[in-house]
Length: 259
Image (cartoon, rainbow, N blue to C red; front, side):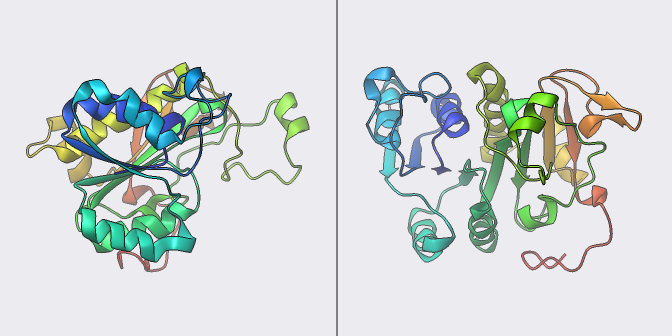
């Protein structure tokens, strides 16, 4: 199940299509005139529902594709629970980059369903992929926003003029990225998805799981200050793994997984 078929979700679907037998695609939005530049849609599909357009674009892969014209979020969480119970997906990919993912991931954790959350930071200069294996790794709520990842990037003058003066670097601001930038996040998420769907994992992925490193941050560029490199990334295209042992400070018991 892919929840959110925008820049990341639509590209991930194309990457995974040769490797799976069926998909469920969930998104309520329509293809806009701005989407084909960054997403897996054509200009001739502007105005169509994204899930229907994406299904059409995946027809060469002989997949059983279920389309859900709906935005799963905190307001219809019971409906999401019911769908999960009926569909029983092997894997769920959350590609909404919204706070609703806390609610969605809690349902998946309690149903012991593997899941991924992926998002790009502004202009996809950096990106984040959190993968969760219930009862084995830390949960989404343990990780998101609680990991110390080193020094944070600074706003450039153009961004300072554009953003709210009270800008919080930990809160995402919607800002377009080119497909060549955001696609790297989708590609890595697809590779992680493939590992989560396999019976036997590659050594590098098993190593991540064994070391409780289930948060990956990657970069298309680097930035540093006197305190070091932003997010600990010193090379363009490098991906750094973080996990439960990188918590910023002592935390209370997690309400999701009770760690």
